[in-house]
Amino acid sequence: LATALPTVMFNLNHLGYPTITNATNWASWLDGINKLAALPNVYIKLSGLPQTYDAPGWTADDFTPYVKAALDAFGAQRMNYAGNWFVLMDEEWEGNYPDMVNAVMTVMNNLEVTDGDREWIFAKCATELYHL
Image (cartoon, rainbow, N blue to C red; front, top):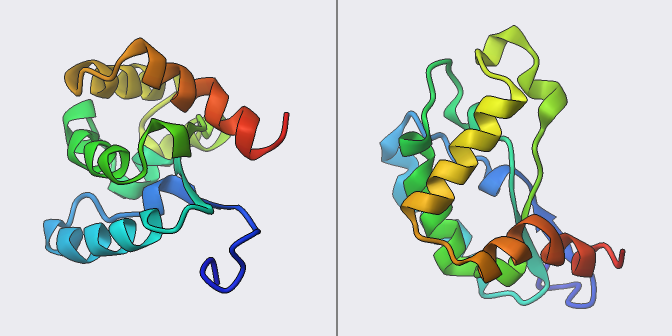
C-alpha cells in the first residue's frame, strides 16, 4: 500500500508490533522493517513497547535491540515517540507511564542517541509528519 501511494505518509505503529518475547520472529520482523524503511513515505512510531513484549516484567534491555534496529533502518528523522499512557495504566501490563518513559530513556542512553536525534524522535518528526 505504501508503495502504491507514495504521496501518502504512513506511520507504522508500535515498531511494527514485534513479538519481543519470541526471538524466532526477529529475522522476519527485521526484514519487514528494512523493506518499509526503504520507502521514504513510511515512518515508525516508538510506542507500545510493553504490548509488544506481550507479558509483564519487561525492561529497557528487552526493548533495546528492537529500538536499535528500527532506528538504524528509519533514522531519527522518521521515528516518532508516543507514550501509550492510557494502555499502560492497565494492570495487565504491570507498568505505568513513568516506567515506560524511563525504559525508553534508558534505551536512548544505552544506544548513545544524540541530543539532536532525540529532538527528532520526541518532537520534530511528529511535527513534520503531522504538519503541526
